[in-house]
Structures are given as structure tokens and as C-alpha cells.
Image (tube, rainbow, N blue to C red; front, side, top):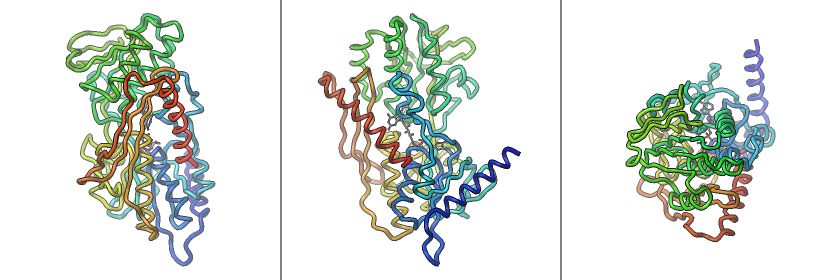
Length: 423
Ligand code: FAD
């Protein structure tokens, strides 16, 4: 009964929002369906609805009522932001921009009929489909770890309860305890994310009288994003609290045991860990893989000028789910790609002007209070891929006021991107 009432409500919501924008007289409006209301999808939906002045009927399919940002979830773990500050709603997209909200899971895409099939059975026809479902985790990529084990050894790489679980576990770490983080292999969501998280763990432990705790990062990679500046900051602020071990040192992550909080590497066995944070290997979100847009276990190939899937010109794939050349998997990147896709969709369906695509990214990471480092670049289509044409990265020994300025930029960016996504 409850399910039935919810369905009716959702159907009504979709219908009401569809009517909110004026139709082009004498002609059905072209239909755009967006799957995934995150950094890529929410931005694309908002730009298409806002800039087409009601010429496009935009439907946003999102399974969750609330969006908790992964970006700045590390600041939540560090105590710099509240949970409410990283939680957002979709209401304004419907009320101000006339976007139809379908709160359901997209289970399939019928590419021949150009329809998205929702869990409840509803079929949403589209002229263009924009997919931004984010990532899925490879639960079999770390021996001994599994979907069930994520309750004991959380990943925190999808937002919401997992982030809160990590914070709870961090609060319980005793002075002298050991946190082991298993870092992911490339390519994964947010390249500097694990290392900013380790910084926030150390910040919390040190500032709450637990400076004898240690954080061991077991990395399958030989190197990581902003490595030099991260490691300089760790030494300066946290002494020996954070220990990073590359594959040549730990000799491979052999297994984890959630029952005993044990991690076995080729070199050492970590027993009775205060907690273990497993960040596994990743792949494109299920809906993109099911639709045949990504190879098994991989990401969707796209045309760098339009963000269209190379195998289907009616579908654009954005954000973490696509293989975006030199661009990292970040909210900044997804937001930038969404604007290109929205422009192309409008141009093709309404005849509006389009411009050469330009992509941008910056990723800031907080190392300690008022000390943020950054990496980023400008990107353009080149030789069939999105290529970096200009890059920058923070340097060692930068003045304190520059690092403080970086953090002000980071906070300003968060306010700007969430306004850009949710209106
Ligand atoms: P998402 O934002 O994950 O959105 C996907 C949405 O699709 C979700 O809301 C999901 O519910 C929905 N969805 C998926 N499948 C379906 C379906 N079948 N039906 C209906 N809905 C569906 N990026 C930065 O730029 N800066 C940062 O500082 C930063 N920090 C980070 C820190 C951490 C710890 C992590 C984990 C990530 C961080 N990121 C950061 C990365 C950023 O969060 C992602 O790159 C970004 O969210 C990707 O956007 P997206 O649209 O691809 O996916």
C-alpha cells in the first residue's frame, strides 16, 4: 500500500513538473531524460531546463531523495563541516526550473526504442539521454572484502551512511590504535581523496589527544596525486602518524579479515586494527554498463567534443562513469562536462548556438587547518580524447597565506558548484 501511494505521488510529481514549463505551440517538446542527480546529472538537467526557456521537457531520474556530496565529505570527517552542510535537496530544480523529478531507480535503457525503464515499470521516452550515474565498487577487488564487509570495513566512497560510519569509527580509535587504509588502483573517483582523508584522520586524532595513533596507507599505486605536497604536510603537522606504503614496500595486499580487523600484505600482517578503510577498485555505474556503453568492469568511451557515448549518439555520458582522457573523476570535472553536454543537446534539439567545448578542473585538498593544496588544469578535445592543455599543482614550501587562500577558494567553489547543481 505504501509503495503504491509513493508511486502515485511520483507519477503526479512528474506530470506536474512537466506542465510547469510552457510547451512550444503546436509541437511536442523534445524530451531529455537525465539519469543521476549528482555533480554531472543535476548540473546538466538544470542548464538544459534553464537555458532552453521551456523548449525542452527535462526529466531527472534519481533514486535518492537527498544528495550527500562526496566532495567535502572529508571535511565532514575532519570536523570542518556538518553533515547538514553536505546534504542537498532537489526541490528547486522542479519548482524553479520546471524539471520533472522521477524518484526511482533506472533499471534499464532500451536504446532501440529510446526509452529509460524505471524500477517501477514506467518507461520514459527520450530524444536525448544524459547519463551520470557515478561509480560502482568492485567488491571482489580486495581478497576477503565484500558487500557485507563494508559494514565492518567501510569504504566511504559513496556518500551517505558510509561516510557517517567512518566518522563513528574514527571517534572510537584509541590513542595508540592503528587505522589501515587500503587505497584504490587507478582510475578511480577523486584521485587526491584518500590522501586528504588520511590528513583529516590525523587532524582529528591529534587534536583530540590521540597523537600516538597511526594511519597506514597501503597503496596498489607507485605514486599518487599531489604526493610531494601531501607528504611534506604530513611530516610538518603530524610527524610519523601517517605512513604511506607503495606496492614495492608492502609487496601486495593479500587479504583482509573483517571478523578480526586484520590486513595481510606480502610484508606484514596488521592485526587488531582500530578500523580498516577499504577503498576498492571502481567502474562505471551499473545502468551505463547494462546499457552496453562501457566494457565489463570499465568506463564509457565518449566523444570528447560532445560527451556523447561513442556507441550511441543519442546518449551523453558524464562524470565518473565516463573515460574522460586526462580529466580526473571529480565533481568539478563532471560539472564542467555537464555544461558541454547541455549546450550540445540544446543546439541539436532547439537550434540554439553552440561553441567549441572547453573543460576545467581544480581539486583542492585540506591537509591541516588553513592549509589546502590544489591541482588542476584546462582541457580540450585533441586527437580523439580530452587532453590537458594547461596544468598546475601546489608546490612544497609555499607561503602560509597562499595555502589559506586555497582553502578560501575551496569553500567558495563548494558554494558555487552546489548552487550550480541545485539552483
Ligand atoms: P555522482 O555525483 O555520484 O552522482 C550519481 C547519482 O546518480 C547519485 O545521486 C546516484 O544516486 C544516482 N544514480 C546512480 N545510478 C542510478 C540509477 N540507476 N537510477 C537512478 N539514479 C541513479 N570532487 C571534487 O571535484 N572535489 C572534491 O573535493 C572531491 N572530494 C571527494 C572526496 C571523496 C571522499 C570522494 C569519494 C569523492 C570526492 N570528489 C570530489 C569526487 C566527486 O564526488 C565525484 O567525482 C562526483 O560526485 C561525480 O559526479 P557524478 O555525477 O559522476 O556522480
